[in-house]
Length: 228
Image (cartoon, rainbow, N blue to C red; front, side, top):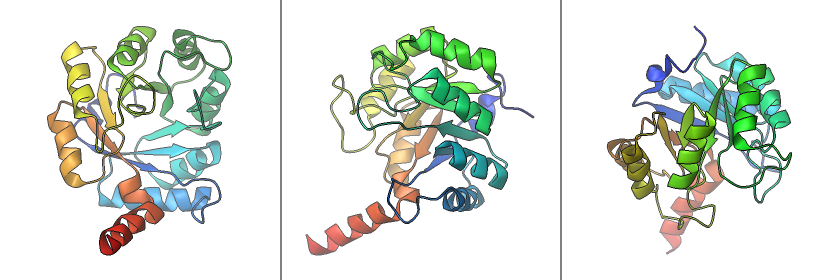
């Protein structure tokens, strides 16, 4: 059954795993991404989030759970699926949900967030996850037609401080705003306990990436603990 706004309940209370590697890393290969994603599904991931058109294609072929796809282009400002072109490429590659920058910042192609979301809905069957950085972003994204709201950019825009763990205060504030959209907690969730805290704060589902799928960072945590 295709994933739609009416059957998103399959993700309620579930773990979504983000499988990504940075350019130049040994694991920066779509085939590796798909293998990591499949392993995460065996462990219980209810959905997978991946970056890049090829990664979306390979992962779609490797797993039977919903795939959240995005395309990072650049490093500063609006770079998570920054334009309608990027978004439609992700949808055409097979993403069930396209994650886009959901902030109120100017987009590179000049389209508004509402125009971008409308274009994705008109030209594909994909849902849209708006990666937000603040309550104000979340409100605007819901009004613009986003199907899901994420806290992905909390602490990465000037509106919120960068917390050590998940921004639980922001999660609670968005939940209290009752925007009528599922809220996906994402960002700096580094332990099972923090994932539980995010869910208890009212998140619909939780995304964990680095702590599960980025060996270099995980190894560094242990190394730092041993040499402190």
